[in-house]
Amino acid sequence: DNGSSVNRLSDLPSPMDVIQKLPVEKNGIYRSGVAVALTGNQTTALTYNLSDNNGLAVASKTVTVSGPYHDSKNIDEIFSDYFRGSRNFQGTLTISSSNGVPFATSNFRQYKNSSFATLQSTASTGTTVIPHIAVGGGYDLESMIQNLESTPQTFVYSIKDQTGGNHN
Image 1 (cartoon, one colour):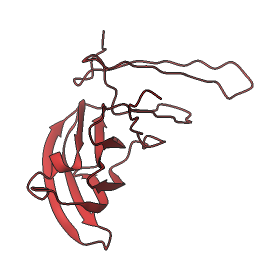
Image 2 (cartoon, one colour):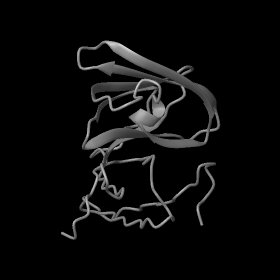
Image 3 (cartoon, helix red, strand yellow):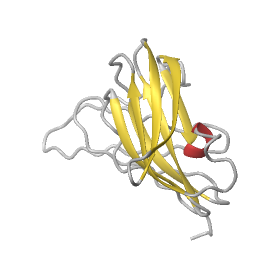
């Protein structure tokens, strides 16, 4: 331990879907966030709804996006008006697409006064989209693919930029 904190991404990235529901929290120690990715070329309105632990809706925001699309923000960045000051919060973030365009999400937690790092693992067959990978800017990317089958498998691994193009 070198004194740095590791912030953990959700254990499993979500499957592509038209609605995602994530637990979120903000307090003096850490704050939750979400990464969202659309892999197709469609346009949709993404609606972010924030509800407290009692199910009371406290904030909402809609953004129109065109795929391929990626964004990653802390909840106090998404709902900056609601989180003015030092408001603590615990509840649920629900994201939905207006016209059935599927998207993937991962939620994360960032600790106060620490560098941002993520760990993520998934077990999957077929295509898995991990919506947030930091490249450059002092970040390192380490990944491991493990075949859990008894027969050889083929894996295709690609990193895309925000426009859906291959990252060099």
